[in-house]
Image (cartoon, rainbow, N blue to C red; front, side, top):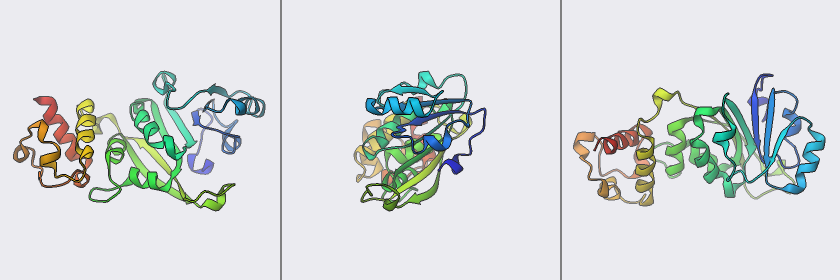
Length: 231
């Protein structure tokens, strides 16, 4: 995982959940600035003593203000994200894309599949569209249960998320988030029914209202969001 990140001496790195420092050990000393956010206060003294110079925050990543911290330079984020916080944390980080150079995360394979899910696939959902709108998603490699002690019952996957240029993003991000949330709240319904409250002219949009939310591309969701913003 450290080799895939490819750090440079002028990089600013933020590690989420260093734990006992398994990944930190491979990355420490190779960047200009190293920040880590760790929720377990019992691990803080050991991390401080083993890795001098790290800016260490004893905090819950879901409550940490990444936008405020990651100002002034592009940051590189890394971490092994627990299954129970992966989705809400990724949604939180979408809003920080302007301050991020890239993100390398180890996730439960199911979550990684959702990030990369293409239109028309079972894994596609709100997280897929939200992440793919702001980031290019690359699946790097799987990690088997035997790589951990004790071994979990699931495979993990390492992914790279790289922000799209601003020109590739929706001009109506708030409307896009609302449209995607409404659509996937009734993911089994056809678009015409799921988004009925929006009163859309499907013919003018050039989108088939009989499709289901998981069938749409990010660009089609952006088209809908822009139409909503213009009303």
